[in-house]
Length: 455
Figure 1: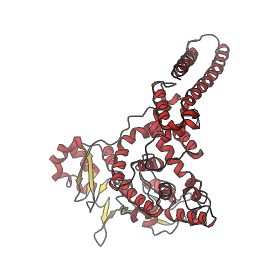
Figure 2: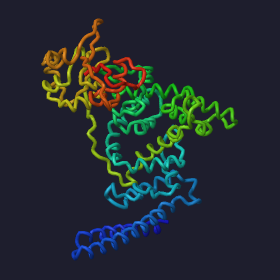
Figure 3: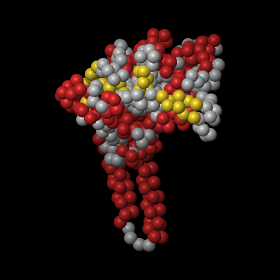
Figure 4: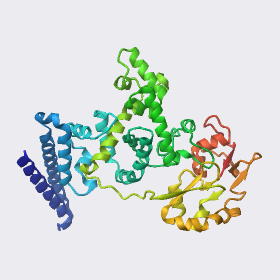
């Protein structure tokens, strides 16, 4: 076995060198355009043949340790396979990995690799998992996501563990937002963990004209942990609890009851064929059926990306930070000018304050990079007064009769071709904001209609 493995590795190395040498000729050949074109076509054919050979050799190497005689040792063999291939990548450039673009890996290898992942959540391989592994590996943003995971995974893992939940639930952030704390779905879900407004409020997340806790990674992680704990307490099954995070516990319960009535049983695999929206009265949801597959695929990709030649980017994620309670109105610009922290950095550390204004109400905190600690403390007493009339004057904010602080209002007249989404983008607000400010029950507006917009 060891001798076969060494020979296969040598063949792959020779093939890779030949492939690289062949492609190098493109730039070195002289001659007429016609000759160059013919030469390039020939080299492309040779390169394609070489790539097929490499793929066949990879399959041969991958299949060797997973023969039926060794099936009982699958997790161990998966570890041997991944370590061996990590020493011997097909290509050094991540974007050129054959595995990445074609997922040229046998099912048996994917099964073995997934089986080797330690997880309290059942990770079952199926066609959906393979499909989503391929989709994730083809994403140009994957290196950035892996880089950002160094920041977000510890936040999520620590939060989930504090509630006694499995650490691997952290992969939900990959499925939901791909580590974009300000991500927004077409349905209105927002943030790292993609909470809908109603669910956000149910789990104590503040969402108003100045602050949206759905965008705060720490608060979103805490709310997600409580939601997942409630789902698990209800269904006693992690695949069902995870699917309910996206599909809703009511819809999952309806699927279980439908499957049970049809004599299919009352478990995840039976419910999966009955994931109809609107609590069983809507259409069969492909998203819900594939959601657990996406979760397993995310776990796989973040464990085995080196085997696919993916090189993580050094993502610009927030570093160590200090947190301060804010007791009065404060604008990011005030902090930036006195402490020296760029406004962009403050926005990165504090995405929940989407207007860059902190009211100083209960629960309002400011996070700053730890490197600015001494500079912040030195000017903390003068922060609130610095350019206060200009940055926080009546053109920016106003107070209601009850004393509530709200954004200053302006009026917009609806024109031909307008819709709420277009107007919201124009003013940097959300559609939900426009509907709330104008007491709209739906998205219908008419030409000439006056809309209140709070800047």
